[in-house]
Image (cartoon, rainbow, N blue to C red; front, top):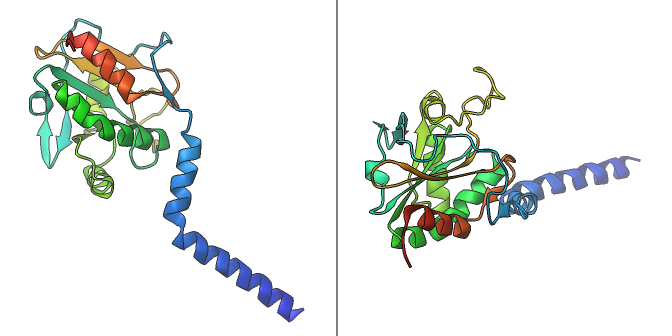
Length: 212
């Protein structure tokens, strides 16, 4: 009887140790499985929050590297800027996968003269840890008290102040031309779906009138 109990306890301990040792690999595999069908090639639904096409970009109230920012100037490319509103790079697997894919396309956007900027509700130290871990060079900025997402008209209204997820946006992309005019938007109703980065680049080029 005692031997059986000892064997069972030993097996549980072994499993716990193995789970701890391989936690990163297991988490990565689980995320890959969960997000394997998340990318789509175009925005087909009628969900369309955010500033109107042709309107002026309303600005931001966010933190980047310890400083408050209100303008896109330091992040803009010569042909425009793609602003990516994302829920969280701390706990949202779809947001994490999207940012990793965007990072792999960053040079393509740069070659097209399009700057990239990602904004989330995560604290700056969370963003800093993520960028260091995954070698992210795309600028990440932290929204201040949901002010940026409110101003942009994309604050998720399903949550109230005090909720753990209060301050997240409806995830999507806003294309801003060099004069600060909204040239295009890509928002999907399902937070589990995101526009493929290659398709987003094609759309951004078309919206900004960038020829091949």
